[in-house]
Image 1 (cartoon, rainbow, N blue to C red):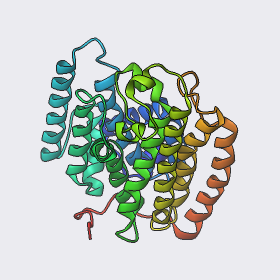
Image 2 (tube, rainbow, N blue to C red):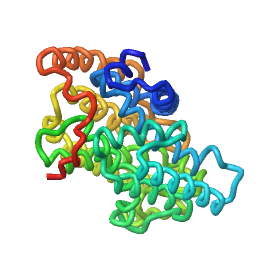
Image 3 (cartoon, rainbow, N blue to C red):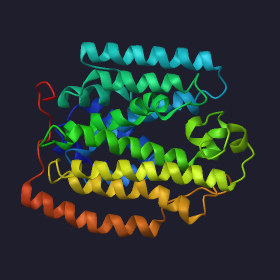
Image 4 (tube, helix red, strand yellow):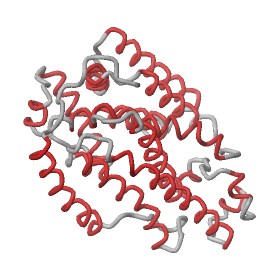
Length: 319
């Protein structure tokens, strides 16, 4: 993150700047496509988006990465105590945590509802105990907290012009998450989890045991196609919401939509071989999307300005 980004965002305290920088590093290291998209935002908005990513990534690391030697109960205890400290920090208006300091500041500046963070941590706890979902409705409880609320957290920073932008943001967040589930079937099995609804698998004659054989049968291919169709339907629903954001925010979200949802195109390109190959959006495709988006972002900022830099300082209009 350049000093210019932090200066433009009005972040002057050295300790706070270090926290935002830590969140940016987490974003750049673990969310390369997401990070690329954030560069299309006005500089004054980028630190806040990095902060939200940093919160989500750190919680995810507690569940999946940093504590791999601990039991599920120990992970749950750690996640719970970390979350309790975060909510206590929100109540007092500041945090000494190297990641959460920036998150608390972002929540205050943009009046982001606390319940979005509660829902997110609820879903992270589900990952410690739930290994499969019987129906899509059951899965949606998890996906709402792990993905839909990420979109809802973002919307105030992106400055919506209509209240419907929030519903469309939920759809886009869910589309992103489901695209990841399609790509990561094999990786998720290694963690003991199946995120494709058992009911959806069954309609194509596929069971969890079939997935664990790691063979792309006609039934598995059909089940993946079914999930891909769901991703594309949600993606299509979300597109109207992008036009409801401040013009300077639109190129970022449009590029993210194309690149993230493009994961399912990449799954098709590898003939659904999700157990032996990792579907990725090629660097060439990223550039094909990013370069025109960069030009659009520059034009939008020149024409419409960059929007508010420091948040609303009033309840985040939930109309």
